[in-house]
Length: 245
Image 1 (cartoon, rainbow, N blue to C red):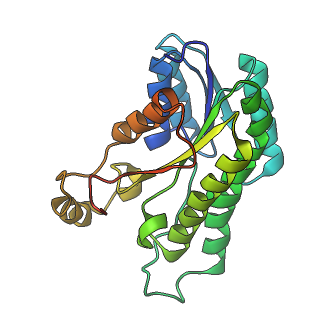
Image 2: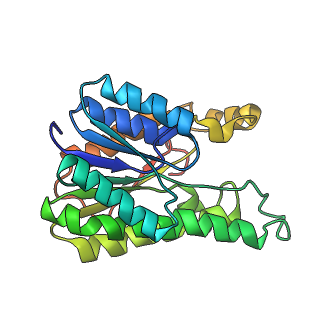
C-alpha cells in the first residue's frame, strides 16, 4: 500500500510512535525514526523496521528546536528522495493534579508548550514544501485531554487543545496538496501510565469497550487516515473506546 513512500514519525523510539513506524513499514514505507533521549530503544526500533525489508533512518532531534527540525527533514529527504508522510507523535507532560494550581510551575508550562505545540508546528512547517511536492499528508497525535480538559495536567490539556486547533488551521493553508488530520487517543497502554494500574483499571471498567487502547489500536487508525481517507482533512478522530461520547 505504501511501497516506496517516505514517512517521518517524531517520538518513534517507543510506544505509539514505534507502533506507527512499524505499521507503516509493514506497508512498505521507508521510515525516519526520530527520538530525543531513548537511543537504546530507537536502535531496537530501527532493527525491527529493517527486518521488515524497508530502510530506516535514525535521527536524534529535539522537536522544539527549529534548526534541528529543519535538519531532520533535510536528512529524511536526502535519504529517501522526498517525504510523503509526517506523523507528529512527540510529546511530553508532567503529572500535576488539576486542583494544585501552585504546583503547575512555569517550567512545566514552557516545556509542554515547547514540545507539544511549537514542536508540532516546527515539524509541519519544515515538512510542508516537501509534502506538497508529493501530495503528502500529516497526522498529528493529540489527545482527548484537548477536548475534555482532563488529563495529566492543565498545561497538558491546554497544549493538546492547541494542537487540535492547529490541525484545522494547517489543513486550510496546506490544502489541496496536503491533508492534515489529528488522532486523539484516550488512555493508551504505554510507559506513560506505569505505576497507575489501579487508576487505569477503574477507568477501563467505565468504558464501553471495557479496556484502554493499545499502541497498535492507535497505529491502525493512523494508517487508515493515511491510506484510506483521501478526501478527509482537518478532522479530529478520537480513539478512546467510547469513554468520552
